[in-house]
Structure formats: structure tokens, C-alpha cells
Image 1 (spheres, rainbow over the protein chains, first blue to last red):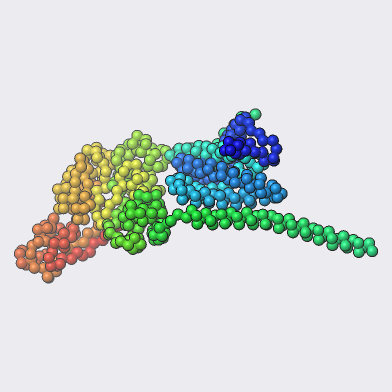
Image 2: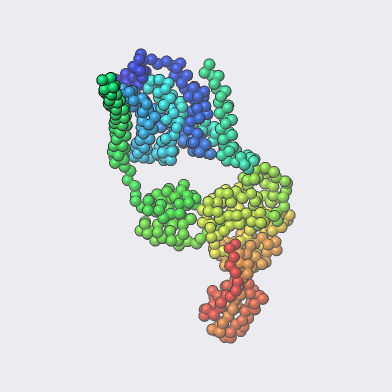
Length: 214
Length: 351
């Protein structure tokens, strides 16, 4: 029973077509979401927390974990609603606004549940959860999963990989910015200007991964 | 005939269009409305179901706290402190930034009485600044932490203030400014002794000092007298003159560095006037003089306590103060059984 449900989750095709699943495509999705089409450095989504929460390595890791967590939940909720509510009624054009309210309320719900049943995890993710409720990277993953016609399984894999890619970018940025704290920087570039320059340089560096996709 | 037919078709067409516009609007409105309602009801239900019991006192305490989130209490922010107070993990007067009024308000919320405690002020135990000799020219990031990483800093004295003002940057209450001498000045009115500067200083020369103790040994050099003196003209050379002259035994000599015990110090300022290098700062620049009025019964208690023998007079006769000798320490005032001695003149400075 569980096995067959699991199979359905992984292979169910959004258009009711032939269920399919291949390791190769899964790997392609993972590598693409983490490196080639990194949500922060290539798609330029979620720049706000990328610059705001990247001053310290600890908080960057916490934020990254929270983003992975919320991305998976948001993908699950939005994929199910899109294919089971919007598509049958021919209301695909309501996608953006529907996803926003689904994600926002889902995160609030998760926050309540966490506070009740896992105060430790709530304290760890605490301030980051409401912060990323309407983060565009989260919405971006949900929307792009639909655009790319991913099955639920692929969507979930994509969302985890996108979250890991976000965390990677954030952690790299935090590491660089922590180093920059003690560097001799011209007065005018201190703080955010330098962060923007670093972000640009990192984005160019990630452009190098474009060759991976073939 | 033709126009009538055209009119009918037009009316029919607009009706059809109206109907399609209506359905195009109602469909999504109903869909969005029901999704929104469903999610809203779900959240409302969840809020009731997963409600976490919060102590109303936490909110109440948070309301009266200064909300500076300075961390001086040892907790990460005012909210964490409020929770700790309610849970009984810390004292009701544990907030360093709070005035006595705020402490009393918190104590009232908790149903206890706030304990009175002496106001502390951050104090820099170095007065080197421009008096301290440079060992080499440093050019790099202007931050004390960076400077201290390069061969122990550019100053010849490896204990003193580096003068880049990391403490000024970190102060959440704007209580610190850079002085002309290259040593930060601390506004004792603004300082709440949160201890951020104490933590950030790479030299560990900032300490929290009771505000009522006006005499401070502003040097942290543990070097031998000669070495310390070469590096800085206002260094403590460990000559012990202050310890000898102190009437309250408040000065302790630790190796080559004198330290004042604030619990014993009586603010007499004798050590500051005795110090050959000027390492001791007397926070009372113009000291008052003692005057004895006619109610004096000549008990001689004051003559015995005076550290400078500034009071003369024989037994059972009115005593007088020799103004030149009086240093305004105020010990005679405390000893006098008849309250006949008053301190007059004098200026209490900030620091």
C-alpha cells in the first residue's frame, strides 16, 4: 500500500500521461537546480535574504535549512492544488495569486505546528520562517515546477535541490562576507556595496557551470 | 427591417457577452474566495488547536523593558530576558539598561521587590592615546581587532588602547565618542553597562566600574616600570606610592600594576595626587574643602581620620581646617558625630 502510494508520488505525471521516472532526469534536475540554474545566482530569485542574512555563517545555515523546509512544503501544496483544483476548472491563470496565499498560509500553519510540537526546531528556524513566507525563490520554485511540467516526484526533488542551491549560495556569500569584515576596504564600498559586487562576481563564477548541462 | 434585425442581433450579442463576462468573473471569484476561506478557516482552527500557552507576564515585562536588545543581561534580546525572568532564571533587576523605575515595574509584574544596585559605567583602563609611543607605522583596516593581530598592535605598549574605536562602533547607546587624546570617552549618563564594549575590546582593558567611584587607575600595563614608562609617559610603573598613601587600603599592587578595589575606595583622590606618572585619573577635578562650624565639640575624631593632617585644634575646642592641606576626601564628614563638618565648593565631573 505505502509502496504503491510512494510510486504514485514519484511518477504521477501532471498531464495524466504515461507515468515515468528516470534516475538520469533526476540527476539532471538536481545538478541544474543547485549549480547551473542556481535560484539565487542564475535566476536572481530570493536576493533579499541572500543579502540580508548572509552576514554570519550560523544564521546563513539556519536560513538555508528553513528555505529547504518551506520549499518542499510549498511545492507539495501548490502542485496538488494546481493539478487538482485549478487545471480541472480551467483556471490556470489564477496560479500566481493562488500559490501566494497557499504558501503564506502553509508557512503559518507549519509555524504553529512546530511551536506546539517541536519548540527546539521552532527556536532554530524561528525568525526565518515568517521571513521567507513570501520569498520569491519559494514562489519561483512552485511556478517553475509547473512551467517545466514536472511530476510531483520531480517537483519535490527540484524543490529540495533548489533549497540546497540557495543554501550553498548563502553559505558561500556568508563565508566571503565574514572574511571581508577584517579586510581593508575603501570606506565607500563597506557593507552592502561590497556585498553587491561579491554577489555579481559569484554569479559570473556560477555561469561557468552552464557548460555542465551540455 | 434590416436595421431592426441588426438591432436584435446586437442586443443578443451584448447579452451573450455580458453572460460570458459574468461567468468569467464569478468563476475565479468563487474559486479564489473558497480557497481563501478554506485556508483562513484552516488557519483559525489551527491557531486554536495548536495554541501555545504563553504567560501574559512575558508580554507585560517586554512592554516596560527598554527594548534595546543590547544583550547586557546575558540573554539574546529583551524577549529572551523577559521569558527568563518569568521562568525565574534571572533576577527581576537583571536588565542592565533598565532604570530603577523600570526595575520596580518589572518587580511589580512579578510580585516581588527589585533589589537596589549600584549603577555601573564602562571605564577604559588606559589613558595612553597620544602619550603612548608607536613601535611601528600601521597602515591597514582601522579596526582594533585587525590592528591587534599585527605584531600585537602598533603601540609600543602591548596592553594599551589601540584607539580605533571598535567599542564606539559596537555601543548600542551612543555613549562613546573618540576623545582628543585618542582614547574613547564614555558618557556615564548614556552608558548602561551592557558590556558590549568590554567584550569587543581585543585588549580587554574596558571594565564595568561603579559610577560613584571617581578615582581610576587608567593603565593596564603589566610591564616593569622602566619598560612601561618608555612605551608610555602616563603608564603605571608599579612604584607603590599610591598603595602607601591610600587611607582605606583600597590599592592593591599586582606585579607592576596598581589596582583600586572599588569596594574599599573612598574617593579621597590622594593616590591621584601622589602618582608620579599621572596614571591615576581623579574624576573630581576641583575638590571641595571641609569647613567646621560652631557646633564642633572638639572631640578630635576628625583630626585622627584626616589623611593629610589638615585639621588642627585641641581637645574640647572648635577645630579648624587648613584649606591648603585639605584634599576634600570627606572622611572627616563621615566621622563627625555632631555633623559639624560641611564640604563646600568643588565640582563633580563626568569622568
